[in-house]
Amino acid sequence: MESRIPVILLACGSFNPITNMHLRLFELARDHLHQTGRYQVIEGIMSPVNDNYGKKGLVSARHRIAMAKLALKTSDWIRVDPWESEQETWTETVKVLRHHYNESLRLLQSKKEFMENKHLHERSTRDSLSCQHPVLPELKLLCGADFLQTFKTPNLWKEEDIKEIVEKFGLVCISRAGSDPSQYIKESDLLTQFQHNIFLVKEWVQNEISATRVRSALRRGLSVKYLLPDSVISYIAQHNIYTEESERRNEGDLLQPLKLQNPTGTPPRD
Image (cartoon, rainbow, N blue to C red; front, side, top):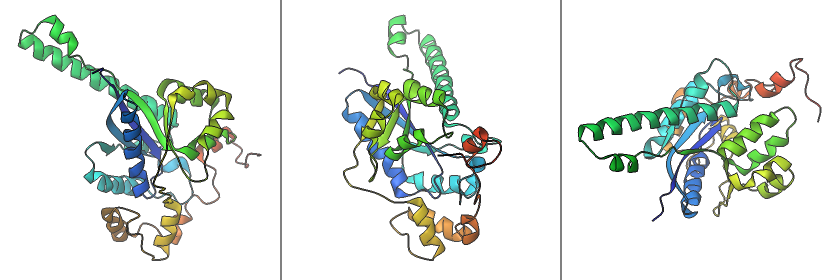
């Protein structure tokens, strides 16, 4: 059987809080890529955004990472990575992708060196050594289909960043109610050019859990059981994370990418 291309899935976002929908995205993407017969998903990475992103109601990354770790305890292939949240300021998505790609290169090189030393010690032949060299995995950005629509938001993305993301890495987009990803692609010359590297995944069992609505329910003392993992619900209650005060955080602020493109602080024109 022809060997499959190893793939790492990377999801960047607020995860504020992490919901069962966020977890479901990874499972759907893995199933879809496996069903192509070309890919083998070897790892999923969840990368919570930096506190300086400026999104309204964004709680501390310390809490968001802790909740993600609790939620992922039941997964044997997805992990949370704090690198993005630990930077001094917000980091563009393309730079996060580059970081994780370089990390996969570094790990691959370490693995190759280990295997070479192992085979040298065992006096293995060159042929067997070359056959067992590990293959560099592809890194793909995992997102909801509405993510494609953000590429049209003025000053939110740099054109060269979009090009690098879709050309070098690729996207795996999970369908969401109210979003038409195929239409977003048709409306963009750039996305159309690289549509072969954009995987559109159909979610047959609609799962429209909104983190914003979950926070609203939590503030009102309503049940969110079965929307979030029980361990996350317990953590939120223990630390009293989502309150009226927390939801006002960054209120009126521009998102950091908009602020960088618009240093005067005035809202960008539509």
